[in-house]
Amino acid sequence: MNNPYFVYTTKAGDTFDILALDAWNDETKAHWIIQDNPDYVNVLVFEAGVDLKIRVVDPSAASTLPPWKR
Image: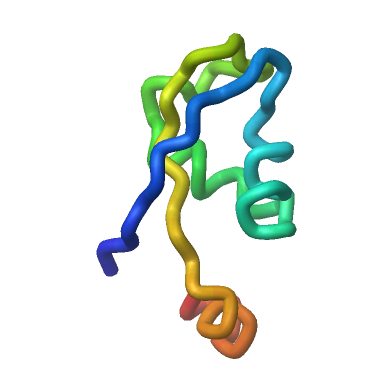
């Protein structure tokens, strides 16, 4: 499945879990951002100005599908 993305430019202090919480109200989805931005897999805390791809997820589909189909 090919998900659409939007580009987010980081602010100093951003982390993957904070970005997941902001994007999807679920910090446990941080691994999606890491998977979609492999060049930054070793970054713990971002500096300002890094462009990251963030998946656009349909909240109605995500909430009704079982975890193995999300």
